[in-house]
Length: 524
Image (cartoon, rainbow, N blue to C red; front, side):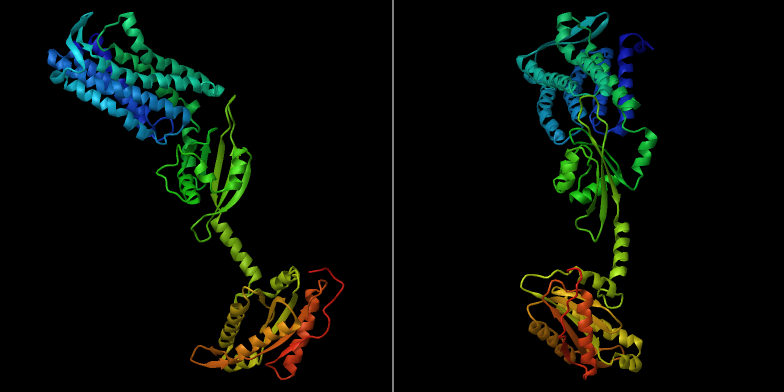
């Protein structure tokens, strides 16, 4: 076919090649540094196709229409070169979409004026035909307004070259050669704007070919070059399906890779929902966790356990691992999140079983004794130990059954918790024997407290299953000391002797131990 021979054929092949790379790169568009390159490839494909359309058209009006159509992708391609370079060197696109929308306003105005120029002639002083080497295309003579808008557009390309040049100063050795190659390829379309008039190259559509080098270099360096990929494809699939959250940040603390679990855990800890954490600054998490931030910014490896805000006991483990840095480049960090919720829940259950009496919810005897041993005396206050024994408890079991006895124990323990939960330490130290330890100003204050509890219990009614009601009475033994050398064993012995007196002296009474509770032992 005639159109496949010569210059138009290469234009169409350039369009097909750019379209292939753009479509093939679309699936990787959410990776930092790649969000805009695939769009640039599609724009270049349109430039080639519109240029071919201009050359192959027979009528002047058709050629002019195709020339006008080229202007939108031509102008947008320069802006997207800037967007691609900006994101490529920073690995972040925060706010870039909004800026691009703002930058494209003059482009939209330019395209509108181009298509309506036949009515107002604000953009072109003249339009004609130009034939070079047998190839015919449109030749235009721009106005000052036209050249001003073109200069505005080309500033983005010049700025992109500047940004990439500056980034070479901090590029690692591994990336340096690819960055240089990309810079050289970018200079082709940007430099051609200034060089083509000087070289007097007037071949219609030649500008389209100048965009092919950066597109090809970008495609192979970012999408196809496995050396620039953080992980091989197989590893990537494994990491995406891991239960642990994986977050990788660069030397500028920007998240450059993250798996699905990492997205979820990061959102939970930072208490904010992001469409994607990719390209965000890890500061959004670190601002909430000062200790983690200290180790992170010092690039120190460490492990943390962090409670997840707004959850019922959820806990994440966080591991900081420094990544290797290139020559002259700041090191990044690998952050690994692991869900420790089940482990912590199991640990809490084990701790509960080891320290708490299952039936009553009070501390068991062993843990109660351990706590009392570490109960330090306060200034101007002594320590009181109260031992309670439910009177005639065996009679309750024999009369109403053991289930009723358990109900009585639970009711009694709830009464103790209500009165002493925030004032002292309470525990179940025997079958129907309970103990409370608290600070008291004097023996009299301790005696008054014990008598108050005994009196309340004597008036309290326990409702049993089956509609039965019983009243409990309690015998109380008290030990009190203001000496720092007192031990729990001595206090307990004194309180137990006092309790024995209460039980054998008629029950439902309070007895204060009189013997000193001092032994030559370690201080509380």
